[in-house]
Image (cartoon, rainbow, N blue to C red; front, side, top):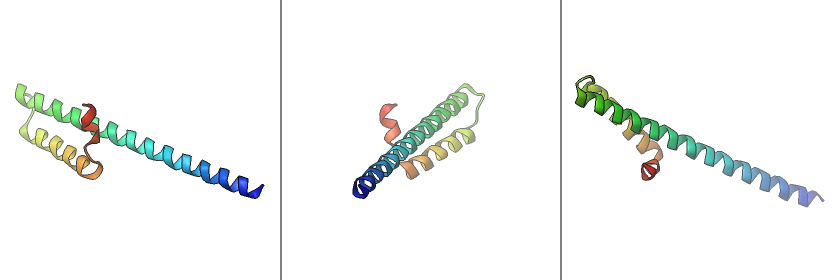
Amino acid sequence: MAGFLDRAKEQAQAALAQGREKVDEVQQQRAGNELLKRLGAAYYAERRGSGSEDATRQALDALEAHISAHGDGFLRGA
């Protein structure tokens, strides 16, 4: 009986860890998408004359930092 409970506990912990990884992945994708959206808005504002080159550069730098830390997987769905 103890062996069965130990296996069940291990399986539950593995499932929990897998769920946490998926949540982290989704959060990273959302953050990347938000940074990409901010870059687009900054570029658009710059082109329309209401934004600045500096704001666009900052948005690009933030996006590149995110990609360096988490990869560019979120771009595949864009």
